[in-house]
Length: 529
Image 1: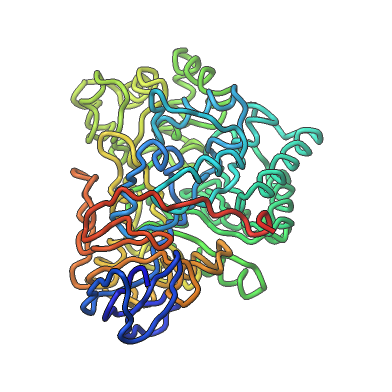
Image 2 (image 1 turned 60 degrees about the vertical axis):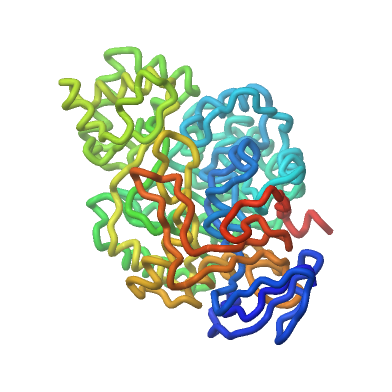
C-alpha cells in the first residue's frame, strides 16, 4: 500500500454504523479495508474518524481554485470535490465580449485578478485548464445566465426560436464536453429574464444528456414557495432531475415555514420526482451588493446599470422598488438596510464600509441609506460584496434533517471579510449540528456530505470508503473538529482535521498543507464513453 490508515473509525458515507479497521490506499484508490495492513507509509488513526472527503455541492471557487492553487479554504475543512458554475453565472462557455462583462459582473464573487490567464472559452477548455493541476476535484455546471448572455444578450424579453435553438446547441455541446448539468440564478440578470417555458426547454437537453438542474430560483423571500413549485414543475415537465441550490426559507415572511417547503418536496418525491437539495449551516447569506437591484435596472449589462444609477430620476424609481415595494432582486421583500452588511470592496477609499450595515454607514455619514447604497455601487463599479442577515435557525435545522439534503458552502473566497462559510461549512456541520446540538448523527451527517452528494453527481466511485473507490479521504477527531472561521476573522482553518487525501495523494498532512495538486475535473460519465 502507498498509505495505510491504521486503527481508524471508518464512517463510510452510506449512513451505516461506523466500524474500526485499517484502510489501505494504492494507486489513487481504496485498495483494502481490513486488519493489520502494511504500507510504505502508516498513519496511526488511533480511533479518529476516517470518512470520504466532503463534497461541496455549491461552490464559487471557479477562479480561486486556479488563481490560488493551495486552496487552503477548502482543503483545510476536508473538501475533496467542489461543484462549480453555480447560480447561472460563470466563465464558460463564453466569447471575448461576454467574458469581459462577466469579469466585471462577478468581481464581487470572484475578484478579477490582474495578470490572470483567461486561456479558455468553452466548457471543455475550462475543464482542461483545471486538469493542469488543482488542489481538489471539480465538477462543472453550465450557467444558464451565461448561455443567455451569449445567445440573447442582456435584454429582458423572451428568447426567439433561433436564440433558444442556439442555447440548446451550446448546452448540449457543453454537456458532451463534460459538464454535469446546468445551473440558474433566477434573481440575477440576465438569467432571471428567462420564463418557465425557456427553462423547461433547456432542462430537456440536460435530462437527455443524463445531467441535473440546479437552480437558484426566483425568490427566497416573498413568493418562495411559488418559486420552488415552479422549479419542481420545470424538472418534471423536462424529465430532468432537480437539485435545489442553497435551499432555505429566508426573510421575516418565511420564519418557521420550512415545513411547508419540505411538504411540497415530499409530495413531489412521493409522486416520482427526482429531487435533492443543499444548504449551508449559517443564517446570513452572501452575494454581490448590486444583486438587490430590480431586474430592469440590470437590463443591458453593467454599463447600462451604472448609467441608470447616475440618473436622479431613475435612482428614485429604483429606490421605491428596493425600499418600499420589494424588488425582484431582493426576493420581493422591501430591503431592511440594517440586515445588509458590506463585507468586501475593491476601492481603498471605501474600506471604512466593511463590517458595517448600509444602515449604520448611512447613519454615520448623515445620509439616506439608499443614496449611500447607490453611490457605493457607482464608486465600486458594482464590484462590492455583502452579507444578508436574513436567515432563521429553525428553518436551517429542519431542512438539514431532510433525507434529500446535501451540504454546500456557497462560499465566496474574496473580499475583506468573506462569509466564514467559505472556510467553515463542513466542520461546522460536524461540530455544531452533530456534536453540540445532535440535530444529525455522525454517520448520517457524513452521508449527507459525501455519499448522497456523489449519487446526485452520478460519481459511482466517490463519496464512499469502499474498496475500489477513489481515495478521497478525510481523517478527523470527532471530539475536536470545529469551525474556527468567524465573521470577524473568516479566513481560519478548521480545528481537528489532520489529514486530507485527494486521489490517493495527501493535500493536508498532520494539519499542514502539502504542495500537491492532485485534483482533476470530474467530467460527465457519458462524455468519457
